[in-house]
Amino acid sequence: MTGAPVSSGSGKLVPLPPDGGWGWVVVLGSFFVHVFADGFVYSFGVLVETLMLEFNANNTTSSLIISLLTGLTLGSGPLASAVCNKYGCRITTITGACIALVGCACSYFATAMWHIVISVGVIMGIGFGLMYCPAIVIVTMYFENKRSLATGIAVAGAGVGTVLFAPINAFLINNYGWRSVFLAFMFVLVLCALCGATFAPLEFALVPDNDEEDENNEVFEEDGKKSAANEDNGEKATLLSPPAALSRSLSQSSGVQRSGEKIRPASSMGAVDAESQPRSRRGTVGERDSGYLNRKDVFYTGSISNVAEFREDPDKYRSTGSLHGRHPTVGSIAAHSTGKLDDVREGSQEDSQALDISETTNTDNVEGKNMFKTISNMLSLPLLMDPTFLLFALSNLLTSVGFNSPLYFLPLHAAKIGLDQIEGSKVLSAFGISNTIGRIIFGVVADHKLPLPFGLGEDTARNRLWMYNISLTICGVLTTFCYKFVGFIPLSVYSASFGFSIASYICLTSVILVDLLGLDKLTNAFGLLLLWQGVGTVFGPPVSGYLADLTGNYTLSFVFCGINLLISGIMLFGIPVFQKKAQAKSGKH
Image (cartoon, rainbow, N blue to C red; front, side, top):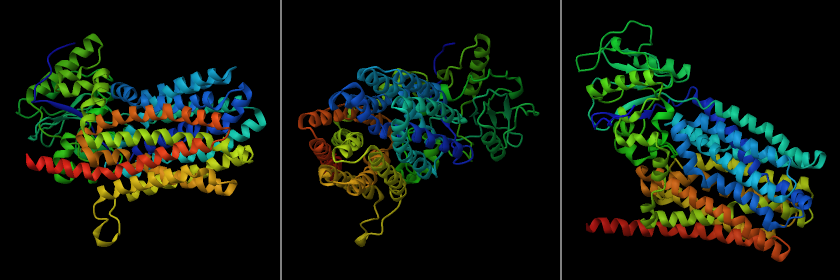
């Protein structure tokens, strides 16, 4: 069914975050996705030495595995976001787990190193990419005020996974052979699919494009329940289905009646009589048709109260960028928009096609269904003309070059200095423990003012940038001189220090992007940044592997990674200079 989109009198679909309830189950599901997926990636170095001996491969070839695995996981971010935008977080995560499961099964039967490169690097990389994006997005969708805590808990799973799987992999290899590792992870990926099943779709509301408000409302669930009207004030609502608990909570707080109850005709605002409207087909409106990426704070992992747009006008922000689940009373909806919605819904029953959101919303909302438009919006090339973003993107590229290789080569380096495989796995576990602690600490501290003298800690945005810069700089210095840490205890100290300091890179990237560019540009900037990170992770490990083959040890590999990390941190101290120039330029105009 086709037709011209409704003009500015209509609105766009925005999710209603409950800030709790089923959201904590979602956080638990996201946490375990990080445990299983990132645990596999970060602990893969334990497996590499055995694979190199099995297939007589060098460091350059074997490093292609982690290079492609992490590169495609990040680089496929815009594609994964587009799929998530169209089909929802649950379907995207389960699909990614199934793809990764196929790659894991192929790895079990590998007879050459290039088999592992393709099965793990390419197939599992794409699968993990489809799992990574929705595992973050779904948490931000369910939380606003408690978002920083919720996302901190979810991403902490990566460190926990490293702690668990590094020694487990070593045990399986020593007792059952390297193929048993892939056999075990086939079961783990089934668990990932089950975790994705917890990512239940949210209820959506149709919000206006203008700032005016009247008595009409549109509230959407995915199930396609019958239209209902508020008996107290005649507000019209269309219910389509969230998780049961969330649905009850929303209906109780707003007074919305469920289908089957007596319905009072809509008020004289021009709305169509609610009793005369047909039942909508199940699934015609909801998560897959609305587009999560229409919400501009979808990639923001900090507390919404820290966003400038929210501080300036919380009510306006909630009506245009996000909504709080406890108050599903939305702004004005034109009367003809309500009639058009019902016409479209009726037509969808007749031809068994999904509801075209373009019938009820403006063209901005079409991106929920158009995957190519979503990708295009995420890859906004004009952003590269912004000096501040370009500097931050270059820093992220260098950080990505130096981030994964130390984890990959740590067990190999440990073996070179005389540690056995179990001790090498414990070195990685030290990284996992400190990284988990670091993610939680950076996530919490970044939202608060710091007790520094002379009021230096009053500006939270400046605090976050300085924490980020200093952490990367420390990380670079430590990695550059990693070869000085000889022995199990010193190497564990390095690993723990590296894990803690690099946590800022994981936790603060999206928050700092908003501080630098504003919330409106976050989705565009984040999409570009994922590509830059993907490029860095593709080229970093092979270069480090080549240096190891060239010298016969891993000293230069760590020096190479450390220098990249060091430069990536130091160069960001120049951001305030660019900001002052931009302010001065705008002041002249």
